[in-house]
Image (tube, rainbow, N blue to C red; front, top):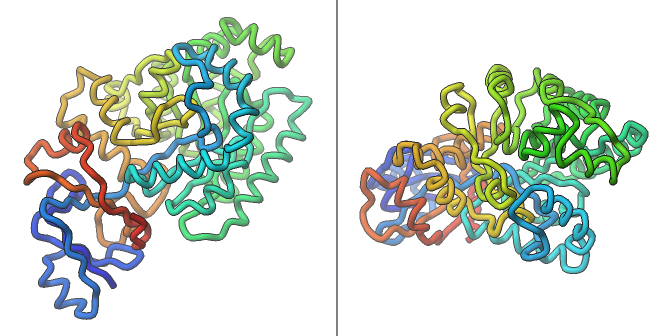
Length: 404
């Protein structure tokens, strides 16, 4: 048993003073330091500096580790030029020093207070890096492929990668499934993947309605994707429309990433089936996509969480930076309330969406927390200040182990 004694503890949006936390791999009790040392006389006590704040570790539910080598190789400003640049440069980005780039990205997330992440793995190249990561990892093996003639081969490859991830037995590693998107995955593959999810109780995610090109292609088999699919895949029509795609997920609450081009009917479907939207504001801006309509999500009681996406469409894997940009990209949202919602989205909200026993400073939850060095006693607008001022993260604890 260990006891940690900060000046302040952030529990949800409530600030506790003069309290301490007793923990091993999980949080055992929150009480005064005197009470905890009486209850656990043999526990090692760690006293923290003045104005130290203990809060839940951050959760980055959607990140592509495999393209971490990108810095200037890919084209920003519009989705289609970006996509063509990914296809042109992907071999270069995934060869050479790709492993070192992935390791650096994972370490950067740790330094930024991210104690859990959801890795969207297209090729399985990041499996070893994610296995060795200090963080908890939900490892989403991605199924992709819109050509019916290739379905069996593509599904066999997906199964091979999924099975390899199941061989990882370390604490805090969770195999999962990702369906790439409605325009890039044949319904046969989607149904097979979702059957596995249902039978094995795995978490499920998918990209959905990220770009104008996707909207036009799914609605009418027209737009910028028409040339793309005809030239690259000899495909004249989309394999399913948006509502058909969503119908595959009716019985499985799913994390749907982006959703910035959804219409009213689709958002009502998402709400009815209790899916969660993953909001990636920096990625959306860099790829020329709209800003997510969070007010409408709130009005429909659709849960949403924040994530960074990957370094293929971001300049940092930093949820504090992501929250700051989101704070400014939604100018009509009440500032303090929205700041609290953003922090919730990368802690308890993300943990709930991923089905993990973390994301809260609460008895019985995993001991995943970070220590921030504040400059003075916090006030009622702490949530805003945490996002704006990016305080130093001096310590990171994962499953009770001090990793920084």
